[in-house]
Image (cartoon, rainbow, N blue to C red; front, top):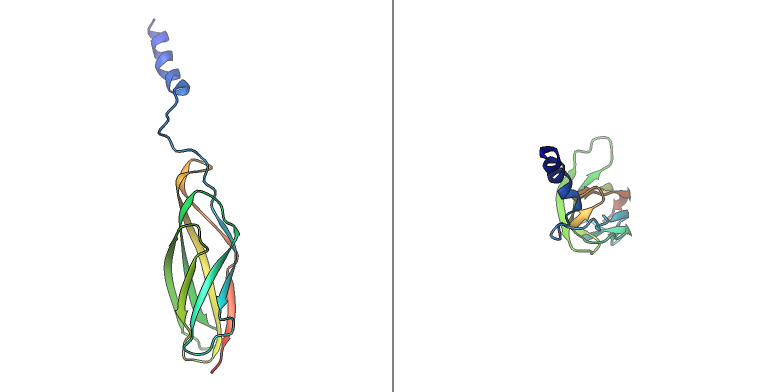
Length: 142
């Protein structure tokens, strides 16, 4: 009799339905490239960078990422690095001001975590995402 009671306690959770459990239906976005506007900025211009979707995913609400702007060259110590977050299903955007120094600059974006209100495959509420072409370069002119 004790064995039957123990088996009932063990098997019971497998047959119960928990209606408050979130479903595994979220799909993280993936990104294909970073596009800047204007494409050929001048010193002091405000540039808008947009991280373009490869796939927009579904049922997620926040993506985190960080970006770095650096100048190429032998003796370059110029760089700006910031962490950002974007809420909603829009393509993430951010702005920066072009430095007052001529040269070739590289903008690199690293994608981070995606948060969702339902579960991703694997039963998690957050996951990582990727960007295929995470770097863009531009020359600063007068």
